[in-house]
Amino acid sequence: MVVVTAAWRFEAPELLELGSPPTIAVKPYQTLLDQTLTRLAEEFVAAGIDWDVGRLNANPGSILSRVAAYRDRLRLQAIDDAVAETYLGSASELLDWRAADYGVTRRVVQLANPLTNTPEILEDDDSLRLRARLAWEALSVAGPQGGYVFHALDAHPGVYDAIAIGPESGIVQPGEVLVVLQGREGYGVPSDGIVDVIAARLDAYEVIYSSGASVVRPVRDDQSVRPLGARVTIAAARPLLYTTTATLYVSSYTDAEAIRLEAIAKLKAYQEKMRRIWRRVSKEGRQAALSLVGTDGLPVIDEAVVDEDDVQPSHLEIPVGEEPVVTVVVR
Image (cartoon, rainbow, N blue to C red; front, top):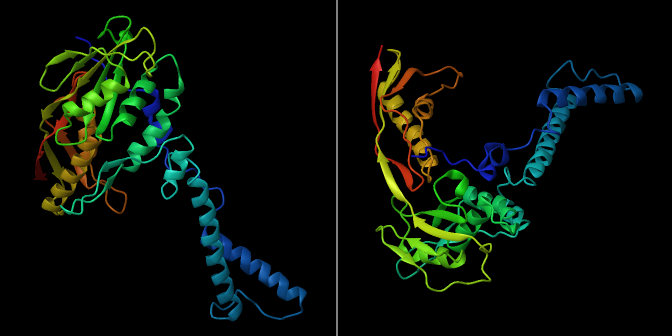
């Protein structure tokens, strides 16, 4: 059995999780105020005005200097915010325009239906960023992993995640490619219709549905995005359910129930982040997610202990965390 955790270069944290770039313009407010007061004092001396601008906070010179420093701080922050919008990993308000530079537009995941009061649901920012990053992978004619993943995500908005596995994994034979799909609904099992759409886009030879049924497609398209010589199989992923049982050790002065609820919320967020095909959910990662830090920067939880070992799904499985069981022990 091959035990590997999928980790592609286009999903590397250093590419999309750097956050905003370092500040290049913003200075501390006090620095700006000191500079303004110094300059104002120089101007008063040059003009022959006997006025000590730093002696009283209530004098007009000090008041105007504080206003000027505040406005400078806002202006410089706006510069840094504008710089951040030019990067794919940190753009927010201009993310759609940034993704358009890669030839990618935001998908409509769910169409609005006024008859049933169904709202329109758009693709989230993280998915849009990843598809934009993958766009360059799809330009290759040699069939890299990222190219297959891009086309799988681009072909249908119902695809939440996809992986492409080649012969170097030991899972498929030379000349074969296995593309595994995860849907957006429920536990992530894609519908047969979604699987068929991706099979058509990648001109798959074989399709494996969620029921386990395997079908060989009779019609092949020699003008598809599939590289010549590649035999592509499309498979629907299946869920691997797991439960996390944890014990939190806290000090006696803490609000145990409030801590338990906050820790569960953090753990669920971590589980949702890891709910992707072939992602290993480590024991250490769950313990780190359960750790809380107070406003003073000090740990709120003395120790978080998870009972279960790592969750290692296969290349056809999605790790789906069920409701965690968390107990708080006050020391």
